[in-house]
Amino acid sequence: MTPSSAPITLASVEAFAYRVPLRHPIKVSFGTFRDRPMVLVRVVDTDGAVGWGEAWCNWPAVGAEHRARLVNDFSERLVGQRLTHPAQAFEQLTRQLEVLVLQTLEIGPIAQAVAGIDIAVWDLFARKAGLPLNRFMGGAERARVPVYATGINPDEPEAFAAARRAEGHRAFKLKTGFGHERDLRNLRAMREAIGPDDELCCDANQVLDVEEAIAFGRDIEPLRLSWFEEPIRVDAPLEHWRRLARACSTPLAGGENLQGAQFDAACDDGVLQVIQPDVTKWGGITGNLRVARAAVAARRRYCPHFFGGGVSLLASLHLLAAAGGSGRLEFDCHPNPGREAVVGDLLPVAEGSVPVPAGPGLGALPDLGALRAYRTWPL
Image (tube, rainbow, N blue to C red; front, side):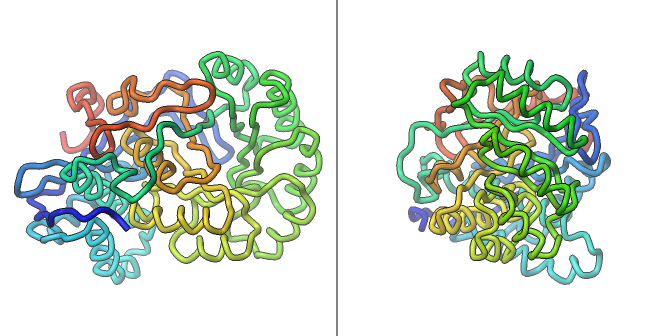
């Protein structure tokens, strides 16, 4: 339950798309990031109060502007609406757009646009209540949350990890899926670089078949990884996932590509020991708060997925702080003005954790002036 708050009436809902060029591309098993896109969502109520959200838009390369346009298209369904609870917008839009999803088969972009709106509405409610978002969600007061460094490329990752460790990180995730021997070499080098006590995990982004995953899982057992993320396709038969779980001692992780009731099945079955929904990809705060609490109650490790801009980082942080448990926040260590123009120096890493912002709502506002040069829509 969230603290009680006064109803709001929305006066506007709008989105903005940005793209930040990358000097050094970021490699994953299914492709390469050559820029960092971001879609910000702004909602304003009839009192002039503002809330901010973010919609997932990493892929395909043309996806950011499309999602921003979807948000603006959906705005007519919300402007003038009186909301008595922040979840109301998510529930209303999800119900109203069911047929549109069937008509277009665009389940992802539509869900991501709705998620961005939902985050913004929660931020608005929390700001008007004068509470940090995690406290507005009903979470216990929490000063810090643990993080892990992510987005580590397969090219000499041990050097990148050692540099991040010097900055205060104590947990690291390597991108794998680039070949058995190369991946194994990289993980061994990273373990040597960070030492025996820091957390180490890997993410194959669904590229292995079950036999390849079992072979790799057995070879990494001496490295004591905290988890093996999305080793096989998320739609692989459940028996394949169970075979992998039985064959490997490393906990299996996933969730960024699940939605809705799929999370219930994941928690109930127990194959996934680490649950990783993405707040901007499906569900927003409304959907992810329920998933996070269910995961912690089922004694799973809730580690929200993140690879976006500053609003999604803060929303993920507040969800983890509200849910509790032993999870870590995914923390992108690559330079990204789209993140820094929101977060700034608000989240300094020290001994593997960052502070929970104490300001109302997300705890920060986007610096639109700093982002102006990167805006692609509307021009």
